Amino acid sequence: MTMIQRLSLSIAGLVVLMSTSSASAFQFSATELSVWNDPAFKKAFAESYMAETDIEPRITERERKQVQEVLELISANQADAAEDKLRRYRNDASSAVFDFIQANIYFTTDRLEEAAELYRTAVAKFPKFRRAYKNLGIIEMRQLNYGAAATSLSRVIELGGGDGLTYGLLGYAYANLEDHIAAESAYRMAILLDPQTLEWKMRLARCFFQQARYADASSLLGTLLAQTPDRTDLWLLQANAFIGLNTPMRAAENLEIVDRLGGSTAETLNMLGDIYVNESLFERAVETYIRAMTLDAQSKIDRPLRAAELLVSRSE
Image 1: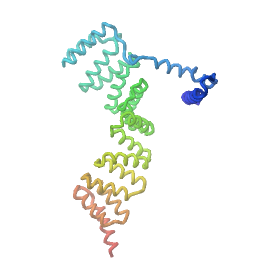
Image 2: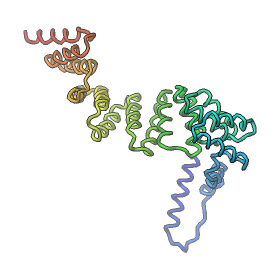
Image 3: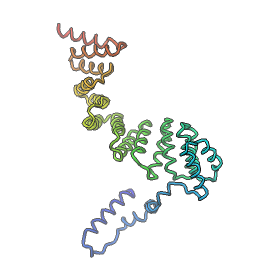
Image 4: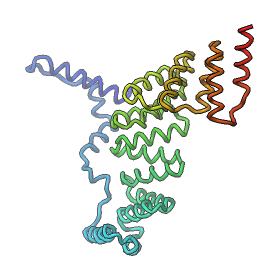
């Protein structure tokens, strides 16, 4: 039994005891006491006393004045002068705040490699520097370094910075690492903390596709379509889920809706035509294939020819 499971049992037992006569004396059992005496629990409980400043490097009074000088230059759009001061103030013994500020200047001017290097310097000096880990994770995402990004963003969450964006980016990193179960968990947390952002729900649906969980994907997309019925991309995704569920005519209904919304392409019309052929609706198939060719002159002619041949053979 894990520490968390034992803690849950202890709390449940405590609630029961407290709900009985208030005059009744009680004692913790050995199992309950083992939770409170567990070194990991003691460490986690002690850390709960730490102030938010524990995730920010401490600076001396002199450094505080130097930081203020630099920030005033930045706010006055004098980035070059700010960098000159930072070069004088930064050294191996200086606060990680100076490395962080310099990294931010690089980040905002798209000097990503230099920014990442200084964010790493900052967290090496101060391993709980949450803001530095977050910015580093964002840069690593932009550099498509998903393994490193997952590590940095996970560290942000460990340090109490688990907001919707951090979980969403972590989900995206895991999805690109093809760890779809971890990606699903991260996206669910992103949705919980940031329910208004459609992107996380779309990404979760794609996770379901990667796990061949077409029913889950269809259900989620149905909920999203009820809220945003004009999104052709959602109708297309759900059509693919219906194909995965072996319900092609439901997919065809979605593709027809996409067409009415003006979102058809040669590819979607060819898909619709294929469904009609498989369902022996040859006349519809021919019409749909011809429309696909109208949209894309490069579209192959073999599909409409096959459908036309089947239509002719049926009428003979």
